[in-house]
Each structure stands twice: as structure tokens, then as C-alpha cells.
Length: 78
Image (cartoon, rainbow, N blue to C red; front, side, top):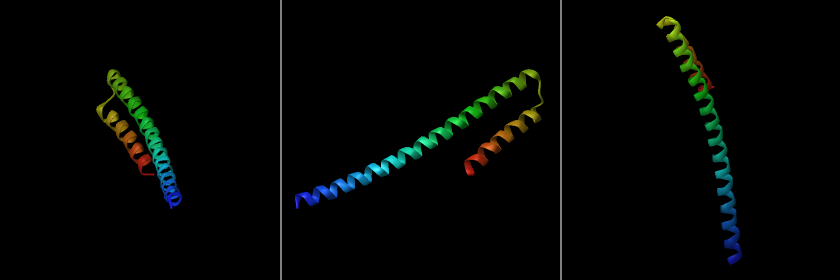
């Protein structure tokens, strides 16, 4: 009987480890996507600052921001 209880507990522990491993992988993938998005946004900020220094019109800057944000939203959805 004690052996049966130990086997059940071992099975439960194995299931929990597998579940946590899957969750960890999902979190790692989400972290990677977040890092990629942060890089894109950082580049956008640098481009906007450069555009402001060069006197690029606000409408062109707004358009660029909109295109990048649209791409980020599309990547997130699909």
C-alpha cells in the first residue's frame, strides 16, 4: 500500500514537472518576442529623434510610427 501511494505521488510529481516545463517554454518564447518588440521600438525611437533633428514633417513621422505599430500588432496577432 505504501508503495502504491509512492507510485501515485511520483506520477503526480512527474506530471507537475512536465506542466512546469511546458509553462517555462511558453514564458521563454514570450520573453523572446518581448525582447524583439523592444528592439523594434527602440529603433523607432532613435529614428524619430533623428527625423526630428532633420526637420522631417510630423505627418511623415506619424506615418512611420503608425506603420511600425501596425506591424507589431500584426505580428502579435498572427
